[in-house]
Amino acid sequence: MKYIDEYRDPGIAKALVAEIRQRTTRHWVLMEICGGQTHTLMRYGIDELLPEAVELVHGPGCPVCVTPLETIDHAIELASRPDVTLVSYGDMLRVPGSQSDLFRVRAAGGDVRIVYSPMEALKIARQNPQRQVVFFGIGFETTAPPNAMAVWQAQREGLRNFSMLTSHVLVPPAIRLLLGSSRNRVQGFIAPGHVCTVMGFRQYEELARDFHVPIVVGGFEPVDLLEAINMLVAQLEAGRTEVENQYARSVSRDGNVPAQQLMESVFEVCDRKWRGIGTIPQSGYRIREEFAAHDAEQVFGFSQHGVEEPAECVSAEVLQGLKKPPDCTVFGTRCTPENPMGAPMVSSEGACAAYYHYRRNAL
Ligand code: SF4
Image (cartoon, rainbow, N blue to C red; front, side):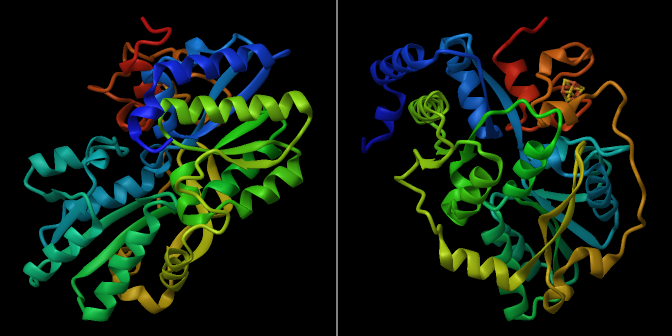
């Protein structure tokens, strides 16, 4: 297959569904890690086409959803300062912090700007030397290379008024945590194709070996996901636990080595708190000491405070595949995209937003 239409071809999809139905002999629980994949599954009704015995649960791969409340509060604190321009991807503006959100700060006069790339934030810093420009750099391994590039470039140019508030997280340690939990139900994983485009899939081979679990690197179109599910079911039915690559048009085993080298030069691996889940050892990136002049945490310093999630929000369990959004008592009533109580309802990649938009088991 060469063109995007082929990955949305109803005939190919129908044939894959038939194949999955034909080979499934027992109940299997599969998790797609990435929120983008969750939205494709919901948008195209793939979960409803599968045999009942193939159950899909949704993983923690939504960067907005796992960014800790404290970090959002730090962004709000920065955006409220008269000397700071806070630059962010649009998704983050509506994510509620403990007291407010970035939209409200902007409405109250804060200088909050939306961009599509950290390089735009660099441009804003160059054009406004009298202001401190802070880029809110969150995400998985996918967004880490451009963020690393922005920090590297700022250092190279001596752009002292540019810094980054980072909350980067890494997928394999989160899968390891899920698989090590006594509550885990997941028997096979669809690994995120975009993350593996950067990182390759050697780390997933370790996970498959350590936990005897099949993992298929999957893409984002409906046929990609059906093919990945078919490959997982085939492995499970045959008792195999390997890593296979469905997304071979983008992913190689070693990934993008120059991008990895750039990331390693700017970031170092650290323990990282995931919203709702808690601290996962060695699951994030922080800016290396050599680039401290561009690390917003070091430039500004933040008060440390613990922040509780709203009691009703079960996003932690949703993000670990233990519950589905309609299991939440306030789903679609007190929690909607217009009035979100938790990040999975705000983000364009959040599982709660996916169920709400595509009206699954709702209301
Ligand atoms: S529906 Fe809202 S409150 Fe419930 S888990 Fe999802 S984000 Fe949290």
